Image (cartoon, rainbow, N blue to C red):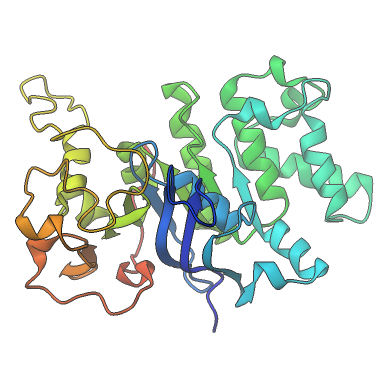
Amino acid sequence: MAPLLELRGVSKIFGGGMFSRANVTVAVDDISFTISEDNPEITTIAGESGSGKSTMARLLLGVASPTYGTVLYKGKDLNTMTRRERKEFRREVQPIFQDPFESYNPFYKVDHVLHAPAKNFKIADSQAARTTMIEDALMMVGLQPDETLGRYPHQLSGGQRQRVMVARALLLKPRVILADEPVSMVDASLRATILESIQKLNKELGISVVYITHDLTTAFQISNNIMIMYKGSAVEAGSMQKVIQDPHHPYTQLLVDSIPQPDPKIAWGTQTFAGLASEGGGALDGCKFADRCPKVMDICHTQMPPLFQSRPHTVASCFIYQDSEVMENPDIASSFVEQDGIPDVV
């Protein structure tokens, strides 16, 4: 059976021209990644700003086309889909964006972002049935319909606006939700509520979630697996518990070390980056992280490290593990492990 959603050898390059390589940015560099139809999970794609996370989300959504490679849904190339197949894809793969306010027209009440897609995709036979489905979706994410509908966006809090967008995605009964930094612009007190809503969609409705974030703390709370990106490449991937609790790649180790600790006796940021990240996709030869890596070796400047199977259900693109087997399957998700579950958000 074909994967539900797949990137196959995908690269996305910005800038330059047909005969020029100047000012080229490799936002996504030869990534193969699948979302299984049989095992809906929450997968985090993490990394610092400019690592290619959001570009990868746009490729998965079909709003950006790859420079190289193919994006497939149920085994069909997005570029060759019929109009009917494309509409089905649009309904079944739904986004939740970073800034909830930008998703609204301030001249329309919030009802519009719920009724418009419901009408476009004809999810109900009558207006009464559509209204009932909208109210159910709002209650599913912890909102009271009588306190939400009939209001303008500015009359709702940031957390309420974001939960309306979660309800909008839920309303269309999607198979996949791509959540791009969904809690970065809301108060800390509301983050747990929104994350709990997303986790609920996965557990109770079997919706696969791709969670895009730079915040490893929230990722650890809700995700099964994680992929760490740096300059468009996957540098480490695998089980969330293993990668965060015992990171193998030097970049992941520095990311985890940058998380503030609640214990004042524990020094924060004892490790530092060995330099600033350069623009673009990195050097043509060698490891992209070599100029910042505290564990750099001579080979790192001349060869790009493949993904090594550094331990079961974890791969790391680092020559520290060159004695380990090279990952044979190009699909990064093949390093993930099926889990019984993850703790509820607290």
